[in-house]
Structures are given as structure tokens and as C-alpha cells.
Amino acid sequence: MNENTTIEKMRKMRMTTMAELYRSSVNENLFREMSVDDFMATIIDAEWEARQNKNIDNLIQKACFKEKAAATDIDYTPSRGLDRNMFERLLSLGFINRRENVILTGPAGSGKSFLAQCIGVKACQMLFKTLYLNTGRFFDMVKIARLDGTYHKLLKRIERAELLILDDFGLTPIDQQARTALLDIIEDRYNSASLIMATQIPVEKWHGLIGESTIADAILDRVTFSSHRVLLEGESYRRKKKLES
Image (cartoon, rainbow, N blue to C red; front, side, top):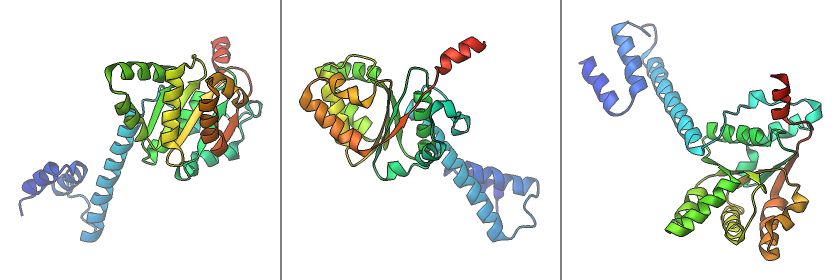
């Protein structure tokens, strides 16, 4: 048997991790105490894990998060009003399987965006297609897409996400184009995919914020009644860090 030929075939089949382990086993006489079955299981498991990690990295990159957010860095200080048990249930991602939504509200700098992205990163790690969008920039994208005829392409891109995160909802004015686009994506996701909305605006003020009554009713009906609510309290993290620096 020509080991070099076998290794080259593995690489051509993109089994690069398996190829490297097999090369090491030949050149360095590794795994010699293993049975054939155990050796095959070892190199296949290594290849599987490498591919899973690559998939996760690709999903995180395509999600377009604005910061690195890890669940291990979440601050559960009592003054924040963040229920650890409740939020850890959200991090288990059962709400995505049930096609439910999450609404994060609280004052500026209270960590809404960070928590939303913690859930988003965890979703990527569990191989859910995720997309993070700043709501104001999304509305700008809508205007450009309507002008150049790519609006439906934009909606399709968003529709493919099993978890959509809309951050900073309500910080920019919502005109007719924005209202229609918001309704379009929420209608597409209703009972089929999950949405996280992070905002400073209390839910009871959304109707007036959205504007046109019929569209506002439709949006609120589809989002709020199937949502988990997280209300954050406490001082701004950004202000706190500035004072400490």
C-alpha cells in the first residue's frame, strides 16, 4: 500500500484532518496500540469535529455580529434584573425549535445588544443560520434595495436565517417603506422562524412608534404574543467603563 497516495486522495476529498492524522500515524508511528476500529473512529471523529468547527466559524462570520459575545461573560448582578435561570433557558435555544421570539428591553448601555448576540453566537454553535441586523441600517438597506430592484432578494436572504436579530429597534424614524419591510419580514417568520428584538422602547409604546394602525396591529400581533420578555435594569455599562478608565 502506498501511504502517500492514500494521503493525497484524502486531501483531494477535503479530508484534511484525517489526512494529517494518518500521515502522523505513518511517519511517527502513532496510534500503534490502537485496533483498526479504534484508529478509524479516532481519525473520523477528528475530521468530523474539524468540519463542525469550520461550519460554526462560517455561520458566525455570515451572521455579521458587531462584537464577540460569549455566554460565559454575562453579568448576572442582581441590580441588572436579569433572571439567570430564565436566560439560561433561552440559551438552550428551545425557543428557536418552537419558532418563538425574544424581546430584550432596557435603558441605553444596559447590555441588550450583548445578550442578543450571546444567544446568536450560541445559535451558530448549534448550527442554526443566524443574521444580526441593526434596525436603522436595515431600513437603509431596504431603501437602496427598492431603488435597485433587489428588495425581494434581500427578503430571501433574511428569510433563510433561522434566527434573526434586530438590534436598536426604534432608534430611527419608521416611515412607510420601513413599516412595510418590517411587516414583510415578520410575516415571513411568523410560526416558521425566530426573531430577537433589542430596544430601549417599552413594548407598550411600539404601536405609536410604528405608526400606521393596521400595520402596527399586524406586527405586534405576530411578535409580542409569542415572545419571551427580558427587561434589563441598572446603569449603563458604557458609562461605568468610562468612569473606571
